[in-house]
Image (tube, rainbow, N blue to C red):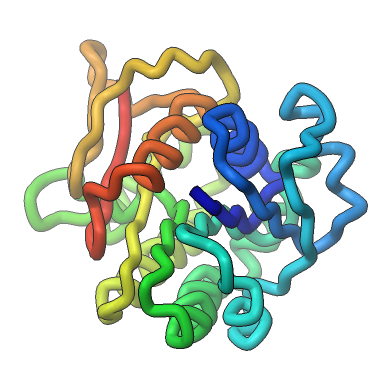
Length: 240
């Protein structure tokens, strides 16, 4: 399979690249700045000759369209800045302009108009999950502030959480072959276990009531979905 990964030098994107290559897929890795390639290779465990690196501006729909020929699936891990290199900078940028997530989603969908059979998987946020039927996490200040405090994020980051929710709503208006991935609330580098549970619009909680997953297992789930689509025009989530 031929898989493209936007944000391939990022925390999740770099793991998706490594996971896909390890499974024998042809990977095109997209980044805003190819000088970050070495950093990504080091995080992935060394140089990957199987990866074709290209620069791409996710906001440029024509550039996205030009990048699609030859790809079966495009996985977008776009986020402002590079959280793997400077998490604080990504938080600041996300808060400063939370509309970037919806803007990127529109550009990706526009790019797909010329390749309607290419599938799109967007890595989003957990804030659009429902804390109870009909109540979205991002729509509840109380729930959202509790989560941000628990994760050590500034409460101002609520704007970015809602920006991710808006991106999902953009996708929901489209008839393209999109999938939206909401990771667990607590996601961080850790162990690749390959053992987790998938869900739909509600978070998947462990025995202690926590929504958590390693970045490595998130990458497993994303490549699983690329290989065997189960959530086309739907959102899915993950947890232990």
